[in-house]
Length: 287
Image (tube, rainbow, N blue to C red; front, side, top):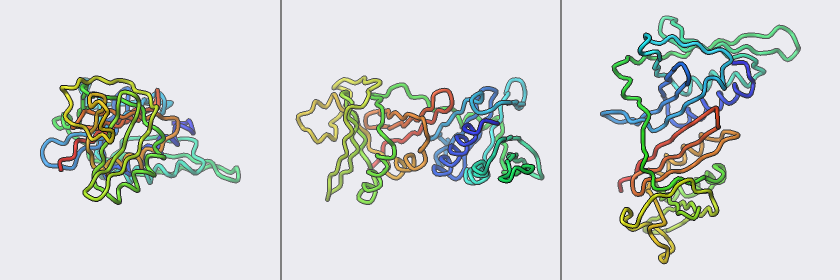
């Protein structure tokens, strides 16, 4: 990796992941590099963060030798904080970043970062070894991309920074957040307790899809009683998990869309076209 902007983006992505979980799975394939974060629960571990990077955008040279010709990929478990801290060195005049899978007493991801000096003298190389666990082929099915094609609405999101400031205040009053959208391009974030009901509305957003009929939707939490319930889709999610996404995903030149399965799920999808796709799945909170 030799492009300065790509290196900084890669550093920012690792920082974002460190805000979402302590550990992640790095999946290395011939075309893409993936970061996967799963729910911390017993039984099958369902991914709730699915991040994929286009290798031809980030890397000038990219070579993979997987398990074999049939399974030409690698799955590694590693610390997100160690990855983020190691990559923070990129901020200091880095002009080259090399990532290798090595074996130094234990398997490691080795980062070799070449930096220019301030005084024009010969630069230096910083080497960081991050211990990893190699995931066996028989466990790969635990890390399959979630597939959902039944979203009732998909709507563009406004500035994440603006939303973050609002949800931070809401978090002090409620542990749950009602996320709703209608077919006219209005996104609503609402908290509702025995003591308070508070909503933030974001109108005039682009609606990518809306596919419901009135028989599909139970009563919706809409402040406007006159509004046709068949035009509103909502789900109630953990407000802290929603905020975790907003804390982490402060990336430049990206757009974010919100997809909702009424009463079941919210998916937040951040994309940098040609470079990055990150999906964040929030299931309906059971109260």
